[in-house]
Image (cartoon, rainbow, N blue to C red):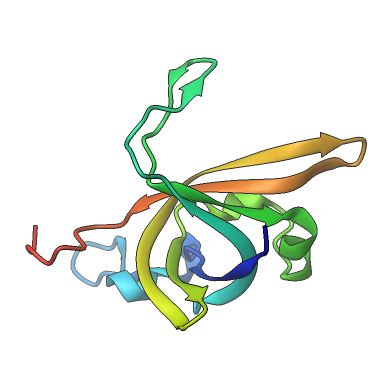
Length: 137
């Protein structure tokens, strides 16, 4: 299966956020909470049905799909710890017709395909971020 471009906005660290004048807490509008997007080659897969993800400790998160990335592709973008992808946004995915806008949140990141040197693949599970139907809820 071929890879395609996936645009991701990494979540900013707490030190990058502005401090609210009134409450003294770090605060930001949605777009201010994330870095500018980066483009990573990956293999996205959308799930057609809701299902539980069995874990050793019980059922895991329900997800809308996942993207697999080669570990060396992430390293080339200076992402040495794939866990920084958690809570980041997928904002678009490349299609044959161009870039399709998405609003997806990466909720879990797992290493896969372990060999002597460590994991070769990273699997990032996502779900819809907010309300995509526009109800305002």
